[in-house]
Image 1 (cartoon, rainbow, N blue to C red):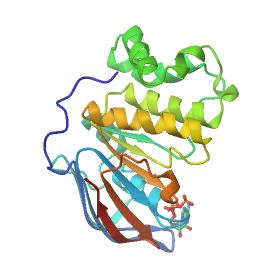
Image 2 (image 1 turned 135 degrees about the horizontal axis):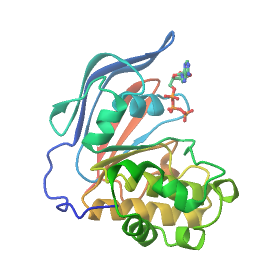
Image 3 (image 1 turned 120 degrees about the vertical axis):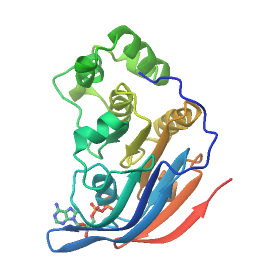
Amino acid sequence: MISEKSPVSTSDPVIVCKEVNTFRGPVHALRNVSLEVKPGITCIVGPNGAGKTTLLKSIMGLLPVASGKITFLDQDITNRPTHKLAHMGLGYVPEDRRIYPDFSVVENILLGTWRRKKDPKKILRQAYAFFPKLKELSRSKGTHLSGGEQSMLAIARTLALEPRCLLLDEPLEGLAPVIRKRVAEGISELRAKGITTLTTASDMSYVPDIANAIYRMDRGEIVERREKG
Ligand code: ATP
């Protein structure tokens, strides 16, 4: 699942957005959004409707960018089809997690990997190393999982595709504090593996402690940027 990539050693940005504008029907949902996602963990914080989901979907090719430029590892990816971005190493975990309710945890994890000729045992071993709880639940169906378990499963399933960068939409939202801590630890381990994360949160209580940069969004705009150690 997760290949050992070189640890975070450079401050070259992984994703750069430059003056990105996106519309959702008549709504001007992103207004000249510029940001840099450096290796490590970047968090976008903002209230409902601020444009966080729109930003992740614009990066991931799921919504058309009207103007501006998005680069991933120095390549222009503006409006590139989602499947191509996935092949380039961008992984996306949507807010609703898209767990298949009738499939087991194992089936959900392996679902996207069959075309990539990966060793399923190795993928599962790595998923369980990240989130041991998933091993206990391996035969449970998606429909029987709690919110926290679904969040872990959605992240593990995307990690099985060996991304270099993960976009996580509100992964800690609505989770009990103890589960939130476990998922946040998982996100922190990604950094140690050399995987860059761009995550969103509705308020500061859902920002992983380990975020090294925080952007605050409001009404489609970046209104504040904070770098942490
Ligand atoms: P939330 O946490 O509620 O998802 P968000 O910060 O992710 O908030 P977005 O979902 O990106 O915000 O919404 C940004 C703007 O786009 C809001 O004004 C919202 O009303 C609008 N919007 C979102 N989805 C749609 C849609 N499907 N059609 C039209 N407008 C939409």
